[in-house]
Image (cartoon, rainbow, N blue to C red; front, side):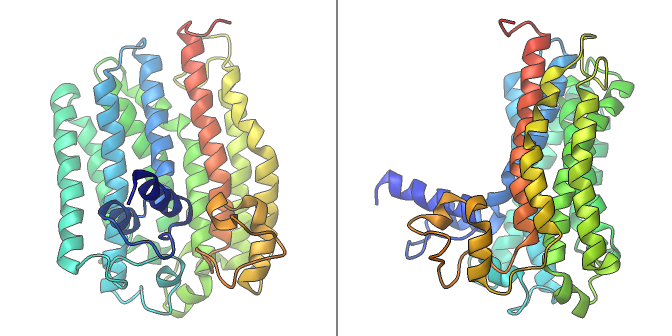
Length: 375
């Protein structure tokens, strides 16, 4: 098998959360499925935002190897979190053959991708590596970094594990906002700039994370909307179960809309930890995501299509190329990856662009403030 064939497999998994039909599972493909690598871009954006904020405060003095280590540690934490979710949801009887998790993508345990001891070992490996990374930064910038690590770890595990199971108490979605917003961004910022930054600046960095954290929360809201009926039967009291589908749709739409005024506020002079008093015009770049937001908000307010074929026609232009190759809206397949997920697909469609533009805007703003752009 040639290298391009491997790349095709990995690209398919990244874009669809499912393996390439008919292709054998190589080790990379297997672990991409086990860790749900298809959503790692959300964590990548959080990490890069933290790195850029550290560069702004550190007068451009950020060790690039430390920056890579921070982002790598966050990706490991995300991988560990996804595996923890699958392990405990299986242990507690949530993930069953008729539950959406087993239908929209291969389940690590239920589909035999890894043994239970193997999954536990992988979880411990991810978290052990993260503890070592945190220890490295703690000896450089102090113990505050441990607060981010331990709070993030607690939310990650207690999201699905007893005795709390935050997801079942209507607190899971807020926990996701805290992790992908203030905790990841604030932790990355402090790890890289803690030797020159103040705690007040740390709080400001965490504030800058809010708009992006809200979009990630919208993704989880969409996922739980898709599981509403199943979660209701299993007495898993997610926010969509507590609010009802209509209320959950309105909240998710609000999370998406809230992203834009906060970004506009960040574009104004001297807001947050962003250096320079002349404004931050590049932080208005996320406003380019408004057309996609309008589309996604509209879909979030509509009922789920009755069949996968109807869903394919409606969502054709928003689907990854791997899912539409050789097809037209009027030539849908009998089934396609990710079905029966619907609302989360639209929320994720938005966050991919919004997160990219938010991160790119901050990168350009940092370069501009440092005089690295020719204008």
